[in-house]
Length: 290
Image (cartoon, rainbow, N blue to C red; front, side):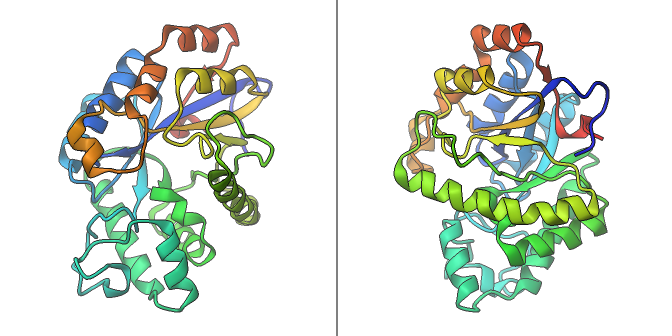
């Protein structure tokens, strides 16, 4: 990790995932940036509300914009389905979750050249907007799966991207919302992330020292966020958030059980803002890391 400025400070990236997936998410991201403590977001090139997200990003140039690469979530690919048949279901959509991607990969049913081509297209689509890209991550963290991590490294080299999310939340962190299944999933993701750190060090990628939000994913209330911020040690941190102006229509469309509105309110909380100030934490985005 390469620091800038003083090395004895606590720096914090607060990132909203899924920018572009729904107008309720888009509006919440901008509100949390303008009125709260949000510093960064990750943009889905294949999101249903992508064009709106791009317009909002251009209207808010201080907001860090990462690329949220996608192979899951019942979302459509950028390329035609005939170009990526091993990546989509009978309806021409990506599978619902990373578990299906893992299973198909294990069974040899994924053509990884198609992953390269699809993600290349997603990156190109966002680059062509003229937005400054601060970092790269992925929907449901699929970039940490070993074959896909290798593909991402090749694409980072091609597109001159040096900053990447490595979601290695501490094995010991349980917070509030972590049910046993989610804790097990977090532990597996952290193990994969630790393996990826070999390449991070070798190729001098920039990432954070700490990551938070996997166990509490979709349930990052003000109390949860406060609990995390109170214990942040010196170093660079990322907290992953999923804010939205939740509606019944959105809940029907995305049956993840996320508490989007609670996460938005946490980001807008004066108490959270005051805690950040009191602890002398510097709010940054990935583009401000050297």
